[in-house]
Image (cartoon, rainbow, N blue to C red; front, side, top):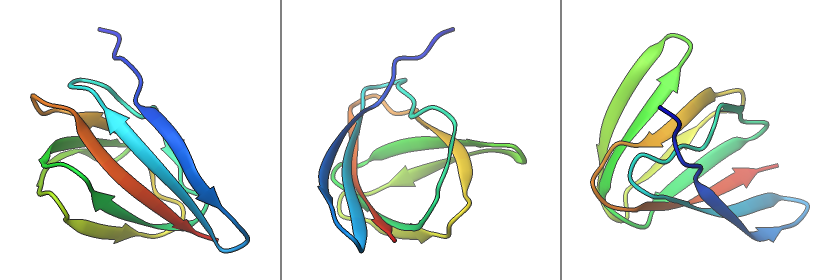
Length: 94
């Protein structure tokens, strides 16, 4: 089954950060990607995300306002496995 693609909107980029808003409809995915920078995520909605990785998949229940950070090199595909739209802000640290 083909999934719809997440939408992204670049909010700001300068010599220190890249700030992007991501929105995923139910079942939508980001597509496989590798992070070139350390990054921080701030959840704008609550819901479930499925992280598909080379070593296995994991689903996480996230809350509005929840934050998390990951290191450079993370490779995954993120899928909205919840019933409603999921949105977050991603801050990449250059």
